[in-house]
Image (cartoon, one colour):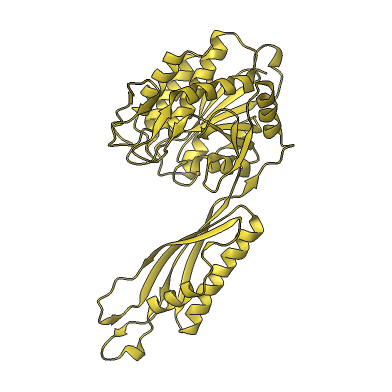
Length: 375
């Protein structure tokens, strides 16, 4: 039932619409026009745009009425994000000579993350419509700013959504693969404020902020903390002439954990270690903590897992439930009370110039979505 040529052409069309994070307007307008012309109710989520004012668009929501024997079942959400990472403007896609992949010209990413997911949803709708297939009420949710902190999914206006179960089409791998867990994520940034002094004439009258930072780092547990938790310092910036005791050192770091308590414990350790070092040298610590992801791990009795595993069993697919340490829109949806998992869309090498769409996987993964919404 899948029209391979149509599905691939839609993907090629989508990746040529520039939509790097905060600039999703082109894709939003494309989707609004496309589904409106088909006669569906289409909404632009104004609340998401208010909460993410730097974006020039809001989340797009499409309402698909249920049909046939499944029309009265609970609403299902299919979700994909509209934005891409840089360099993502002026993408020139092509199909490789062997017909197995879609690639860019090597000067940009391809945008399979996540235009592959959007193209899947477009093809699923077309197959349902053309073949008059029974399905429950569906909501298509296309989010903004996933790549810069899951902003659209966290900001979604849940009053516009009836569905409480969502399949996010944004992963890699083949049919049967699902991401069912993700981490808490803390951004910790700040500065150590010491006291400037001439390094040659009166060093003892100064307080070296970089010495304070070094003291903190030397006493801090970093990198792999336990099986669930990691911590990494990405930036320590102190830029002074060598004859000046440096007054200010800034820093930025992250903490990820698949376990709430372990993550909080490590966050407290980091802050306490920084404060202890500052106190030792009579310096001042200023810091901010921003939690952009919230840990989740769906159990087998969760409705979204049960539906997916049952589909895998019916079609002899090897179910693989994976837990990842990166962020996806599932974190935002789960935070908003929507049970969600990530399914494979068919892309590979995401965020790289070597990104590609694996055509067979893209089509096979689209078929599994059709099974999910028609059985």
